[in-house]
Length: 205
Image 1 (cartoon, rainbow, N blue to C red):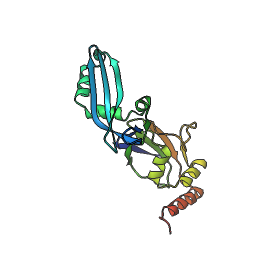
Image 2: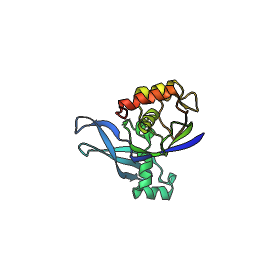
Image 3: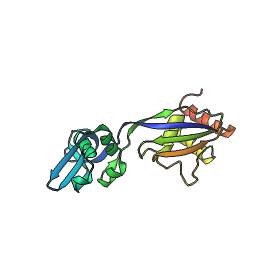
Image 4: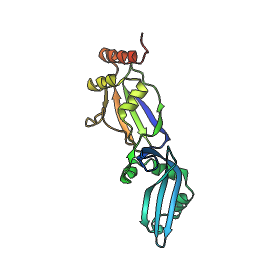
C-alpha cells in the first residue's frame, strides 16, 4: 500500500471572533504580530495584541497574568520583548488559549502540500499539521480530492475512505496534529460516486 503525506501549511493564523464596541457587532480580530508586556514590581503580564479587521480597534489576548519574571527563561522573555516571529505564531495558532480568553475561533488560511492520489491503488494517507486546528478533516479531503459533500459522505459510508481509528467520525472530526486514513482502490460503486461528484464540478460532460 502506497503511503502519501499531506502537510497543512498555514498562510495566516485563525482570527479571533468577538464583539467590537466601535463596530457595534462581532468582527474578526487578527494577530498584529506584536506582544504587549507590563512589568509591575514582582509580577509580569504578557499579551498578544489583536486588531479588528474592520476598524483597527485592539484587543489583548492574555498569555501570562501576574507571573514571576523568573519563571520564564531569559531567552523566551527576550523573544517576547523582540516580538519573535516563531513565538508569535505559536501563540496565534493556539486555539485552546484563544477559547480560554473568551473568543470564538475562526478558521486559518492554509494550503495542502502533498501528492495527488491515484484512485486505482489503495493508499495510506497521513495528514499532518504543526498545530492543532479547527479544520475539518472532511473539508481537507473534499478540497484535495474535488469531492462534493454527498460524494464524500457516500465514500465514507461504504468504507472506501476510513480512519485507522474506528472511533473517529470522518464526517465530523477536526484535525489535531495528525490523522492516518486508508483510501481503498475505487470500486465500480466508488467510481460511480466519483463520477457524480465530478459531474457536479463540471468535469464530466
